[in-house]
Image (cartoon, rainbow, N blue to C red; front, side, top):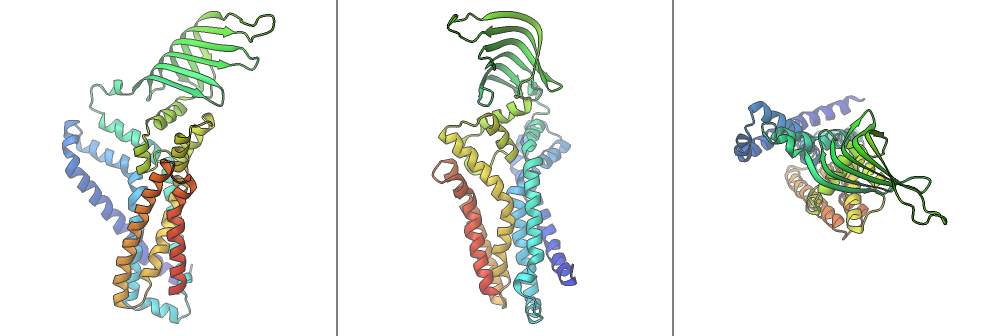
Length: 374
């Protein structure tokens, strides 16, 4: 790495760190002012409150803080270079704007990878963890994990599940009825008083095992046969993790999905694997969320493309005007992103267009402006 690259990185990373910490402190302080009453009503200790904000930190970072911090840090670094005529000196030495910007694009790519990793690894469990912390001192917290009247169909295995009560935390179910078609055409159904997931298998207790043979010309209406079993161990493609993903998808309201992506790429693919057939509304909601998750990491690169042409203009007046224009354009980008998400979830735009249009429009505009400034 050249000495110039190290210098540019240092001048960017220092204000980037200050921006990240500053926005985090500002958000926590602002949220704490308005939420302290709710925390006290839930009898949370200072340690619980700190743990709650740590749990919600990943989603906050990827959705707002990282892109905005990168924008402001880059604008500050470029404005500082312009203030001391360093950009002019670099150009006079034969270093063009594109070559000078390589460290900035490297940081944008690195932060994009961080956003993708956090979306897949840290953001999905953060909501459940935050809810668990808020209910930590609730005497009825165990009851809140139970979901009643859960019914779903597995399209891949052509099976129907009806569960009277299901525990999201433990995967335990009470009053389970499962019906599926076997390879020989027979229909099998089990009615269990209780079921738990252990070592990759479902273990059912107090089971009524029904089997209806496949119809044949000699027996067009076969009668089902019943077998009572105290314990029955079965292997199904449905796991507690998959059922929780289905619950999460069913609980995602269209209005919430229009505000921000609610599911990770892994969760969406896992859900679609067992539910390939979707109605038009659910298909639009899921695929728009999927495309938005793919497009989110590229927001950091788009931010670099937006900031460069405005922050790199020469002249003191142009610097401050460029900073103001760049911030305004960046807010326009996030507004367009929100509008596109809402229109995609509502079925008014194709999911790919709804998710990628802000990146494409502002990214191409940034490239054009960089070409003119260079």
